[in-house]
Length: 372
Image (spheres, rainbow, N blue to C red):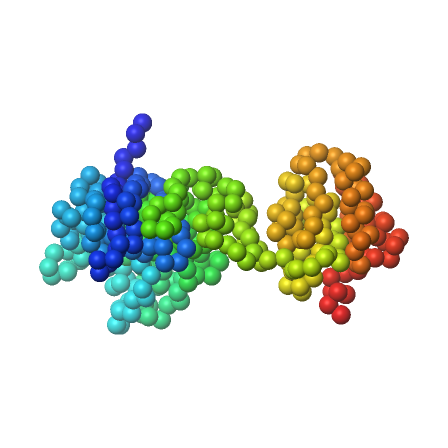
């Protein structure tokens, strides 16, 4: 069954003061879906979002909202169809949270701005949905960033829009409030069948919450598709032109560049236990080798990013004798060995062999000892 596209653009050119930032931009989002725009700084994310809500006029092309040309909608019609939460901090004077949320009802109240009982009920429901009802009488300017963002989301919900546009909604939030905010947003989008368009810098979160990812580069849409396609291979690294360090699309992890030089520490790791050791050594500027890791091991992507040499075995395969010999040779070429494992299972005999050899040769040391 064909989906209803609540928002759609055709050959859209966006910019300001006559300067073209984006060319021939075509995208669409349906009710109940989240479309997230990612791009390097200055690529036009905010310009695109402002054009979708008519804060900036389109230079050419068309934005369709619910089948109507954006330019044909009156201000009131647009406000009852779409709501926006943008990056600029608002500083309303002496307004309570409830009063700020109530401004979302102005498209429905007429010129006098008098709230009806229905309007008040919608405001309270919006505040309940984002868990801020206990803050209703508090001064908006006295809230934390996380609380402010939820109030602004409630104001947008109170407009009862079918299109929600948000520019970097989680940028100023700590991890708890980022996750809480996105959980609320995802629930609202699904339950109320809202079409949502976001821009985000947090690639790991964008990967988890989005139905569709739009990537901007060089004044156009460079790629568009589901997260499973966008966050595959080395595309994200190329999109953001990562030169120092690396980005693992599967874990959403960004890593610094490895320490330069010949490895003089060997790390026996696996099962995620080696990851903090690798990062410690990287911070200390110590080049190291790592092994023996299966290529499907939690340690493997981080070791590949930070280690000078990784001794690895194919996923789900037993460690071959030649792999073990290669690891032993590399380990004995190092001055010190750090073992991140506290025990060895029956399937990890090869790493236990390395541990016993390192112990016999007097090479074992802790990361803390390396600091002295």
